[in-house]
Image (cartoon, rainbow, N blue to C red):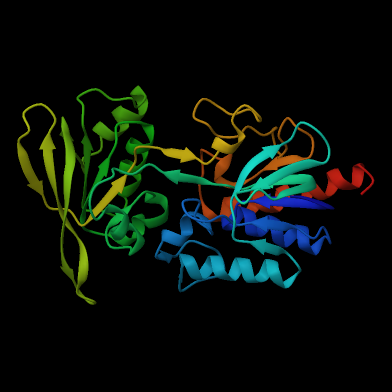
Length: 324
Protein backbone atom coordinates (compact mmCIF):
# COMPACT_ATOMS: atom_id res chain seq x y z
CA UNK A 1 0.00 0.00 0.00
CA UNK A 2 1.46 3.37 -1.04
CA UNK A 3 0.60 6.34 1.13
CA UNK A 4 0.01 9.57 -0.80
CA UNK A 5 1.57 11.69 1.95
CA UNK A 6 5.20 12.69 1.42
CA UNK A 7 7.04 13.04 4.71
CA UNK A 8 9.95 15.40 5.29
CA UNK A 9 12.12 12.85 7.08
CA UNK A 10 12.07 9.17 7.97
CA UNK A 11 14.54 7.91 10.59
CA UNK A 12 15.46 4.23 10.33
CA UNK A 13 16.72 2.95 13.66
CA UNK A 14 16.75 4.31 17.18
CA UNK A 15 19.39 4.33 19.91
CA UNK A 16 21.20 7.52 20.97
CA UNK A 17 21.77 8.59 17.34
CA UNK A 18 18.23 7.98 16.12
CA UNK A 19 16.47 9.54 19.09
CA UNK A 20 18.71 12.61 19.04
CA UNK A 21 18.11 13.04 15.32
CA UNK A 22 14.38 12.71 16.00
CA UNK A 23 14.54 15.31 18.77
CA UNK A 24 16.33 17.88 16.64
CA UNK A 25 14.21 17.17 13.56
CA UNK A 26 11.01 17.47 15.61
CA UNK A 27 12.08 20.79 17.12
CA UNK A 28 12.77 22.00 13.57
CA UNK A 29 9.14 21.16 12.68
CA UNK A 30 10.16 18.40 10.26
CA UNK A 31 7.64 15.95 11.80
CA UNK A 32 10.00 12.96 11.76
CA UNK A 33 8.73 9.39 11.64
CA UNK A 34 11.03 6.98 13.48
CA UNK A 35 11.08 3.26 12.73
CA UNK A 36 12.69 2.08 15.94
CA UNK A 37 12.89 -1.55 14.86
CA UNK A 38 11.82 -4.84 16.36
CA UNK A 39 13.81 -7.95 17.17
CA UNK A 40 16.44 -8.78 15.98
CA UNK A 41 16.98 -5.06 15.29
CA UNK A 42 16.85 -4.04 18.91
CA UNK A 43 14.72 -0.92 19.58
CA UNK A 44 16.93 1.50 21.47
CA UNK A 45 20.18 -0.01 20.27
CA UNK A 46 22.98 -1.61 22.26
CA UNK A 47 22.21 0.38 25.41
CA UNK A 48 19.11 -1.78 25.81
CA UNK A 49 21.42 -4.65 26.82
CA UNK A 50 23.68 -2.44 28.95
CA UNK A 51 23.03 -2.34 32.67
CA UNK A 52 24.75 0.64 34.27
CA UNK A 53 25.82 3.64 32.17
CA UNK A 54 28.21 5.83 34.16
CA UNK A 55 29.85 7.86 31.38
CA UNK A 56 26.90 9.69 29.84
CA UNK A 57 27.05 13.39 30.77
CA UNK A 58 24.34 14.66 33.08
CA UNK A 59 23.90 11.49 35.12
CA UNK A 60 26.49 11.71 37.91
CA UNK A 61 25.05 8.68 39.72
CA UNK A 62 24.80 6.63 36.53
CA UNK A 63 21.67 5.33 34.84
CA UNK A 64 20.46 2.04 33.44
CA UNK A 65 20.84 1.76 29.67
CA UNK A 66 17.15 0.99 28.96
CA UNK A 67 16.09 3.84 31.25
CA UNK A 68 18.35 6.28 29.40
CA UNK A 69 16.89 5.20 26.05
CA UNK A 70 13.36 5.57 27.40
CA UNK A 71 14.18 9.17 28.35
CA UNK A 72 15.65 9.84 24.90
CA UNK A 73 12.49 8.50 23.26
CA UNK A 74 10.16 10.41 25.58
CA UNK A 75 11.96 13.68 24.86
CA UNK A 76 11.77 13.17 21.09
CA UNK A 77 8.05 12.35 21.32
CA UNK A 78 7.44 15.41 23.47
CA UNK A 79 8.38 17.61 20.52
CA UNK A 80 6.24 15.68 18.04
CA UNK A 81 8.34 12.79 16.72
CA UNK A 82 6.16 9.87 15.66
CA UNK A 83 7.42 6.37 16.42
CA UNK A 84 6.57 3.01 14.93
CA UNK A 85 7.94 -0.23 16.37
CA UNK A 86 8.52 -1.83 12.99
CA UNK A 87 11.40 -2.75 10.70
CA UNK A 88 12.08 -1.40 7.25
CA UNK A 89 12.41 -4.28 4.78
CA UNK A 90 13.33 -2.39 1.61
CA UNK A 91 14.40 1.09 0.50
CA UNK A 92 14.45 2.82 -2.87
CA UNK A 93 16.82 5.77 -3.02
CA UNK A 94 17.00 5.86 -6.83
CA UNK A 95 14.39 8.60 -7.33
CA UNK A 96 12.56 11.38 -5.51
CA UNK A 97 10.68 11.12 -3.30
CA UNK A 98 12.52 8.23 -1.67
CA UNK A 99 10.47 5.26 -0.54
CA UNK A 100 10.84 2.89 2.40
CA UNK A 101 8.82 -0.30 2.71
CA UNK A 102 7.87 -1.87 6.04
CA UNK A 103 7.85 -5.57 6.84
CA UNK A 104 4.10 -5.48 6.26
CA UNK A 105 4.50 -4.08 2.75
CA UNK A 106 3.47 -0.50 3.49
CA UNK A 107 5.31 1.94 1.22
CA UNK A 108 6.13 5.37 2.68
CA UNK A 109 7.38 8.33 0.68
CA UNK A 110 9.86 10.77 2.16
CA UNK A 111 12.06 13.64 1.04
CA UNK A 112 14.96 12.60 3.26
CA UNK A 113 16.12 9.59 5.25
CA UNK A 114 18.35 9.46 8.33
CA UNK A 115 19.93 6.04 8.88
CA UNK A 116 20.76 5.16 12.49
CA UNK A 117 20.60 1.37 12.47
CA UNK A 118 23.71 0.98 14.61
CA UNK A 119 26.12 -1.93 14.91
CA UNK A 120 26.21 -5.06 17.02
CA UNK A 121 29.24 -6.44 18.80
CA UNK A 122 30.19 -9.88 17.52
CA UNK A 123 29.86 -12.36 20.35
CA UNK A 124 31.32 -15.81 20.99
CA UNK A 125 27.95 -17.52 20.85
CA UNK A 126 28.43 -19.54 24.04
CA UNK A 127 26.03 -20.29 26.87
CA UNK A 128 25.30 -17.51 29.41
CA UNK A 129 27.16 -14.88 27.34
CA UNK A 130 24.19 -12.68 26.33
CA UNK A 131 22.43 -13.17 29.65
CA UNK A 132 25.44 -12.07 31.71
CA UNK A 133 26.07 -9.13 29.38
CA UNK A 134 22.48 -7.91 29.74
CA UNK A 135 22.70 -8.16 33.52
CA UNK A 136 26.04 -6.39 33.79
CA UNK A 137 27.34 -9.51 35.50
CA UNK A 138 30.83 -9.78 34.08
CA UNK A 139 30.56 -9.92 30.29
CA UNK A 140 31.09 -6.84 28.13
CA UNK A 141 32.02 -5.84 24.60
CA UNK A 142 33.26 -2.36 25.50
CA UNK A 143 36.23 -1.72 27.79
CA UNK A 144 35.82 2.04 27.51
CA UNK A 145 32.23 1.73 28.72
CA UNK A 146 32.68 -0.81 31.50
CA UNK A 147 36.37 -0.98 32.43
CA UNK A 148 35.98 1.11 35.57
CA UNK A 149 33.70 -1.56 37.08
CA UNK A 150 36.66 -3.97 37.26
CA UNK A 151 39.09 -2.27 39.59
CA UNK A 152 41.70 -4.54 41.17
CA UNK A 153 40.26 -7.79 39.78
CA UNK A 154 41.43 -10.23 37.12
CA UNK A 155 39.77 -9.97 33.71
CA UNK A 156 40.15 -11.52 30.26
CA UNK A 157 39.94 -10.19 26.71
CA UNK A 158 39.11 -12.44 23.75
CA UNK A 159 40.48 -11.45 20.36
CA UNK A 160 43.61 -11.08 18.28
CA UNK A 161 43.19 -7.79 16.45
CA UNK A 162 43.98 -4.17 17.21
CA UNK A 163 40.73 -3.78 19.13
CA UNK A 164 41.62 -6.60 21.50
CA UNK A 165 45.10 -5.16 22.14
CA UNK A 166 43.66 -1.69 22.68
CA UNK A 167 40.96 -2.99 25.05
CA UNK A 168 43.51 -5.01 27.02
CA UNK A 169 45.87 -2.07 27.43
CA UNK A 170 43.01 0.18 28.49
CA UNK A 171 41.78 -2.34 31.06
CA UNK A 172 45.17 -2.44 32.78
CA UNK A 173 44.35 1.02 34.12
CA UNK A 174 41.78 -0.64 36.40
CA UNK A 175 42.22 -4.41 36.54
CA UNK A 176 44.78 -6.31 38.59
CA UNK A 177 45.61 -8.38 35.52
CA UNK A 178 44.34 -8.84 31.96
CA UNK A 179 44.60 -12.18 30.14
CA UNK A 180 44.38 -12.06 26.35
CA UNK A 181 42.79 -15.22 24.96
CA UNK A 182 43.35 -15.93 21.27
CA UNK A 183 42.61 -19.13 19.36
CA UNK A 184 45.77 -18.88 17.26
CA UNK A 185 49.45 -18.14 17.83
CA UNK A 186 49.43 -15.46 15.12
CA UNK A 187 47.69 -12.10 15.43
CA UNK A 188 45.78 -9.81 13.09
CA UNK A 189 46.84 -6.88 15.27
CA UNK A 190 49.34 -4.39 13.90
CA UNK A 191 52.91 -4.77 15.07
CA UNK A 192 52.88 -1.59 17.13
CA UNK A 193 49.65 -2.52 18.98
CA UNK A 194 50.88 -6.06 19.62
CA UNK A 195 54.23 -4.86 20.96
CA UNK A 196 52.50 -2.37 23.21
CA UNK A 197 50.43 -5.17 24.73
CA UNK A 198 53.41 -7.50 25.05
CA UNK A 199 55.40 -4.85 26.90
CA UNK A 200 52.61 -4.31 29.45
CA UNK A 201 53.51 -6.20 32.62
CA UNK A 202 49.84 -6.54 33.67
CA UNK A 203 48.90 -8.48 30.50
CA UNK A 204 49.07 -12.27 30.41
CA UNK A 205 48.52 -14.56 27.43
CA UNK A 206 46.53 -17.70 26.64
CA UNK A 207 47.29 -18.45 22.99
CA UNK A 208 45.94 -21.39 21.04
CA UNK A 209 42.90 -21.40 23.30
CA UNK A 210 39.23 -20.54 22.98
CA UNK A 211 36.56 -19.97 25.60
CA UNK A 212 34.61 -23.19 26.04
CA UNK A 213 32.45 -22.09 28.97
CA UNK A 214 31.83 -19.09 31.23
CA UNK A 215 31.95 -20.09 34.89
CA UNK A 216 29.78 -18.24 37.38
CA UNK A 217 29.18 -18.04 41.10
CA UNK A 218 27.04 -15.83 43.39
CA UNK A 219 28.61 -12.45 44.00
CA UNK A 220 27.73 -10.05 46.84
CA UNK A 221 26.02 -7.79 47.67
CA UNK A 222 23.07 -9.15 45.66
CA UNK A 223 24.43 -12.71 45.53
CA UNK A 224 23.46 -13.00 41.88
CA UNK A 225 25.35 -15.17 39.41
CA UNK A 226 28.36 -13.38 37.91
CA UNK A 227 31.52 -14.37 36.06
CA UNK A 228 34.02 -16.17 38.29
CA UNK A 229 36.18 -17.89 35.70
CA UNK A 230 36.53 -19.33 32.21
CA UNK A 231 36.99 -22.86 30.95
CA UNK A 232 39.42 -22.77 28.03
CA UNK A 233 39.90 -25.38 25.34
CA UNK A 234 43.18 -25.80 23.48
CA UNK A 235 42.45 -25.52 19.76
CA UNK A 236 44.98 -28.23 18.86
CA UNK A 237 44.97 -30.77 21.69
CA UNK A 238 41.46 -30.19 23.06
CA UNK A 239 42.92 -29.93 26.56
CA UNK A 240 40.66 -28.09 29.02
CA UNK A 241 41.83 -25.70 31.72
CA UNK A 242 40.20 -23.12 33.96
CA UNK A 243 41.34 -19.60 34.76
CA UNK A 244 39.83 -17.40 37.48
CA UNK A 245 38.57 -14.02 36.20
CA UNK A 246 35.71 -11.72 37.17
CA UNK A 247 35.29 -10.08 33.79
CA UNK A 248 35.22 -11.21 30.17
CA UNK A 249 35.61 -8.63 27.40
CA UNK A 250 34.75 -9.85 23.91
CA UNK A 251 36.80 -7.95 21.32
CA UNK A 252 36.30 -9.87 18.08
CA UNK A 253 34.79 -6.99 16.13
CA UNK A 254 31.48 -5.30 15.39
CA UNK A 255 28.95 -5.86 12.62
CA UNK A 256 27.21 -2.71 11.36
CA UNK A 257 23.53 -3.16 10.55
CA UNK A 258 23.84 -2.18 6.90
CA UNK A 259 22.47 -5.22 5.06
CA UNK A 260 19.45 -3.18 4.00
CA UNK A 261 21.68 -0.74 2.10
CA UNK A 262 24.06 -3.12 0.32
CA UNK A 263 24.46 -2.14 -3.32
CA UNK A 264 22.68 1.14 -2.62
CA UNK A 265 25.09 3.15 -0.46
CA UNK A 266 28.91 3.01 -0.33
CA UNK A 267 30.44 1.13 2.58
CA UNK A 268 33.97 0.52 3.75
CA UNK A 269 35.59 -2.92 3.73
CA UNK A 270 33.91 -3.92 7.00
CA UNK A 271 30.44 -2.73 6.03
CA UNK A 272 30.19 0.68 7.72
CA UNK A 273 28.33 3.35 5.75
CA UNK A 274 30.62 6.02 4.36
CA UNK A 275 29.80 9.67 4.90
CA UNK A 276 31.55 12.78 3.63
CA UNK A 277 34.13 14.35 5.93
CA UNK A 278 32.77 16.44 8.83
CA UNK A 279 29.15 15.64 7.97
CA UNK A 280 26.58 12.85 8.00
CA UNK A 281 25.89 13.10 4.24
CA UNK A 282 26.11 9.99 2.11
CA UNK A 283 26.82 10.10 -1.62
CA UNK A 284 23.06 10.33 -2.27
CA UNK A 285 21.76 13.86 -1.54
CA UNK A 286 19.04 13.66 1.09
CA UNK A 287 20.28 10.42 2.66
CA UNK A 288 22.17 10.78 5.94
CA UNK A 289 23.84 8.31 8.30
CA UNK A 290 24.71 8.73 11.97
CA UNK A 291 25.84 6.75 14.99
CA UNK A 292 27.54 3.38 15.02
CA UNK A 293 26.30 2.47 11.55
CA UNK A 294 29.00 4.82 10.21
CA UNK A 295 31.36 5.11 13.18
CA UNK A 296 33.83 2.26 13.56
CA UNK A 297 36.18 4.27 15.78
CA UNK A 298 34.47 5.70 18.87
CA UNK A 299 31.24 3.68 19.27
CA UNK A 300 30.06 5.60 22.34
CA UNK A 301 26.55 6.71 23.25
CA UNK A 302 27.62 10.34 23.52
CA UNK A 303 29.32 10.39 20.11
CA UNK A 304 26.33 8.64 18.56
CA UNK A 305 24.02 11.27 20.03
CA UNK A 306 26.27 14.02 18.69
CA UNK A 307 26.19 12.60 15.19
CA UNK A 308 22.40 12.27 15.44
CA UNK A 309 22.26 16.00 16.09
CA UNK A 310 24.51 16.57 13.06
CA UNK A 311 22.29 14.41 10.86
CA UNK A 312 19.17 16.35 11.78
CA UNK A 313 20.87 19.68 11.11
CA UNK A 314 22.27 18.39 7.79
CA UNK A 315 18.79 17.16 6.92
CA UNK A 316 17.12 20.46 7.84
CA UNK A 317 19.61 22.45 5.75
CA UNK A 318 19.14 20.09 2.79
CA UNK A 319 15.36 20.48 2.88
CA UNK A 320 15.70 24.25 3.13
CA UNK A 321 18.00 24.30 0.10
CA UNK A 322 15.41 22.26 -1.79
CA UNK A 323 12.70 24.78 -0.93
CA UNK A 324 10.84 22.66 1.63
